[in-house]
Length: 599
Image (cartoon, rainbow, N blue to C red; front, side, top):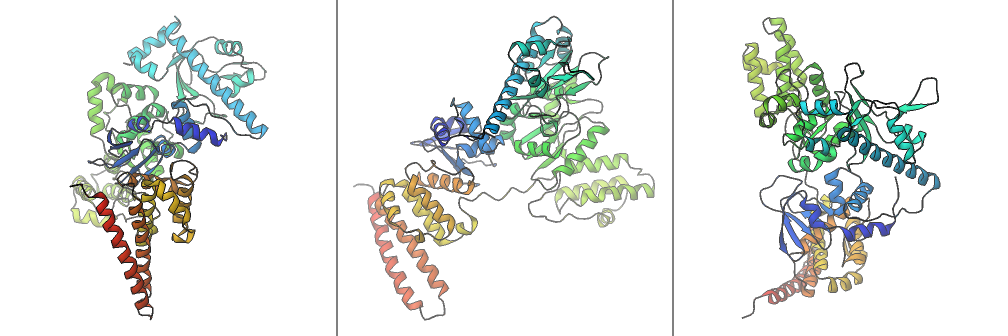
C-alpha cells in the first residue's frame, strides 16, 4: 500500500467540494453562510439533522452523532480504508498524489501493480471493441439481445467478447509494451502443459469485467458461447489483484444506490445482475455462483444493512441462502428472501414477466426466518407424528434466533396450523431466542447501533466534560478571542485525556479545525466535526467565550461539592461555587445584552 506525502492530503482536502461530495448521498439545502442541512444518509429520519460545513469540509448529524471529514465520509459510504478514501477523492477531484519515500522493493511492487491494472483496463477495452465491432461476435450480441439486455446496460458493465483465436489478446498486449509475465500475472494468459509458451486464457467467450469499489478492473468472468465449451463459466485465476472469494460483482455501480436505500439485492449470475439493474433495481450485485464467502458478506455489509437474497429458487440457491445466514450471524444485517417463481432466475423473470414484476417481488421480500420455516415445512412429512417431530426438531435452531416478537408469534401460529397441533403445545417445544447484545435474528430487523458520540460516552455524560465541549465550540465560533484564551490555559484545565487532546488540536488548528487530523483517530475527527457543527449556531463573542470558561469552573465546583458531601470542606466549597456562579451570571447578562435587538 503506497504512503502518500502530507502535502498530498492537504491538496486533496483543498480540492474537495464537500457539498458536491455529500449531495451524491442526500439532498442538501443552504442553511447559512457555508452551512448546509439535509437528511442523514446514515440513519432513517424525517427531519433534516445532517449538517455540512462547506468551508471546513466537515459533516455532523445531530440525530445519530456520526461526523468527520471528507475522508470519513468516503470511508463510511464507499467501504474503503483511509488510503482508499484519499485515492478516491484525488481521482474524483483531479489531484495527483505524491508518494512519499518508500522502500525500493515496495516501490517496485507498487509499480508492477499499477502496470497490471493498466493492462487489465486495456484488456477490457479490447474485449469491448470486439463485442461491438467484430463480425465474429455477432452470436454473442444475439445471445445478449435474446436475454433481454440492451446496449446501454451492457456498456454500463463494459461487457465484451474474447475472440476465438489463441493469441489475439496476447499479441495486442505485446504491441502495447506488456511482457508475457505481465499477461500471465494479470490472469489473461495461461501456459501450455509441458511447454513454456503461453496463450490467451479467454477465447470465444462473453466477458464480464470484475471491478473493485473504484471501478478498476481486477479480473474477468467469462461465459462460454458454444455448447462444446466446458466449463460454462471461468474466471480469472486468483493472483496478485483478483481473489474470487473477496469479490462482489457490480458493487462499484450499485454502491451509491445501495447506500441510499440501505439495502442491497444479491443475485447469482452476471446476467441476473444486469437484468435487475436494467429493470431499475440498480442496487443489485452478484456473487458469481453460490459459494458465498465470509469476505463477500463483509462486502455486502458495506453496501447496506438489509440484504435481499434473489438467488435461484433451486436447491443450490436455497443452500446458498442458508450459508449466507450462517455467515451473517452476529453482524448487523437483516437478511430477506425475494420469492422468485420456481424455475425462473432473475434474468428470466425480467425477460418473461417484465421489470415491474421484478420490482414487485423485491418489495414482497420476506424475512429469512420465514423462508427457513416455509422450507422446513415444505420438505417435511407432516402427515405422520414422526414427520411432525422431525419438522419441529429442524425448526428449533430457527426459533432459537427469534426473541419474543410479533414475527415469532405469527410464525408459531403458522407452524401449529401446518402440523395441526395446538399453538401452545408447539410453542412449548420451540425455544425462545435471547437478547444478545448487538445481535439480531437472521432475517429480523437488527436494532440500530448506538449513535456514534461526538466525544467519548463517559465524557458526554459528565457535566464538566459537557461544559468543556461547549467552551471549545465557542472557541471555534470566536477564533480571535479563542486562540488567545486557549493558548493561555494549561492542559489540566480540561478533564480527561480525550478532552485535552481535543483542546491541543484546536490550539494548533482553531481557524481550520479539519486540518492536521490524524488518519487513525476517528473519535477526534467526529468530535471536531461536532464542534464545528455546534459553532455554526453560536455568535463570535469574547464575552460568550469567557462565560463558557466560567461554566467549566462552575461545573467543576459543583462536582467537587458533591464529592465532598459530609466532610468539613462543604462550606468553603459552597462559597467558592457561589463566587463563580455570580461571575457566570454577570457574563450571561452581558451576553444577553450583546444579542438583544436594538430599540
